[in-house]
Length: 356
Image: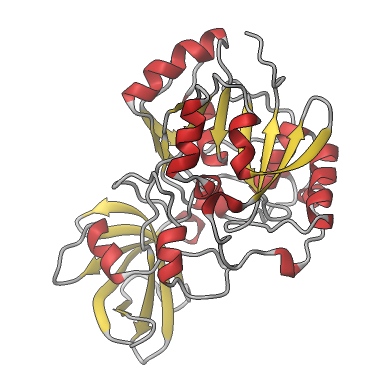
């Protein structure tokens, strides 16, 4: 299939620039993949929309302040997006302008508002896919905690403001762990409040986190015209022993339905499952395209995604391209809010009246 098959027209004013007033106040388009029908609800309705014995699987990764603003020698501006720690202050990164930040180049890490120098960054080597290995040097240490002190949250490029105090709270899930190195939020999880999680538990639903360190594999745009020519960037995952021990027998006998909270959780389970066991840690380059048969999840909660993106391809794989396009057209007609701070879609793949 072609990338252009996954195009749709999206008015720019539907791209959410700020989160809704309440985390669980977003609208929810519920799409039944079997019947091809949909209904309009809200996130707060979720406990009544999924089977009461569902196992909810969110991604509890922490979003890091991985966006560094740079002042190059000579005074020019630049940026670095730190993707993964390599130890000893070294990180895999995207840098711009790439033509000026080649191996041997260095720059100051600065506060984007005051221009005060916070640290130094040095480009060490070039990697495939335009990536760099960089070293960050400062007076306060070289781990992610220090990066959180000097960097900014890496809001997606379609959000047009610099990360502010509101984003510090709202571009992080309420259940985020203290660990992880995500450079984008697992956005379906942003809708959850402690009260909503408690309401799910009261209905008999389980809450069993996994962790995908969200990187380029999730958000890098497709450039190849044919889907089979797009290479996903590797992303690491971890599955806690308690989550794996509970999910493994369920995935074997399909005795309880599994709701993945977000595409990153879905790709984690699919990448980790070998038919009998979930890998406790590993890495995935999984690209879910039409024709792919899910082996783990029964339902998916996800936000609305970019045209011609790997995530809209994933949605189309679950719904079929025709239904996915129709559902997104409905969302546009009904003025749903799109992307990270937007509304959500619940995809039901198995009957709501679950039968083992």
